Amino acid sequence: MTTIAFSLQAVRTRVELAAIQFGRPPKDISILAVSKSQSVERIRDAVAAGQRTFGESYAHEGEKKIFELADLSLEWHFIGPIQSNKTKVIAENFDWVHSIDRLKIAERLAAARPRDKRPLQICVQLNVSGEASKQGVTSEEAPTLLLNLAKIPQLQIRGLMTIPKPCRDFGEQRQEFKKLRELKEKLCQLNLPLDTLSMGMSEDLEAAIAEGATIVRIGSGIFGERVKATPRGIVDNTTGAS
Ligand SMILES: *Cc1c(COP(=O)(O)O)cnc(C)c1O
Image (cartoon, rainbow, N blue to C red; front, side):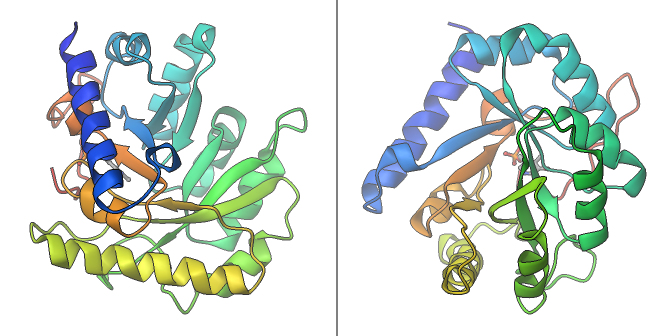
């Protein structure tokens, strides 16, 4: 068994235990393996251990890996900040985008989505912690943005995503995720067909599952701690809890 297979199994066990503890069917929660800064060889190890969905934060790094792993028919999720000059690369290569926070970016993605592919599956990123520097829209901005996105045929709205500020206290972690769950319930009352809550990372997946996460995004829990700079010069400056 590779280290990655072992870590992946440990994450699956954590997800299942949390699901049982909080009264949720384990099959309602999927693990997105966050493979940013990881080599294709390490991704292949995760695939060999049964993982099919991967998350990337940098458009060109993701594009390269998707190309190199095209033999495997994997599902790819874009989870990083989106610059407008990267929308074409993202729309042509990825299946999901979790980090929509502007209509203009979404329209560019839609325009560049190849017509022979199914609509891009999208989540709107929320800034529930209210930190000025963070990506994401406020709860007040979310309904209008989602109602507009729902009209775009090349996009299929799926739900909400958030990256709360890192914190160690379970109760506080849960508070942040609860805000996302309540907002999703409110949006569903507006007849928006949302079935996804993308929340929870290696350090807080249990709190996220307690509040209804359907996708947990796990990087270091599967691949180990990230190296801060790769030979390609990518600096990992995420503010994740790891
Ligand atoms: C890096 C990253 C993750 C994974 O974080 P870990 O703490 O390594 O599990 C999840 N979501 C986003 C948006 C990320 O950028």
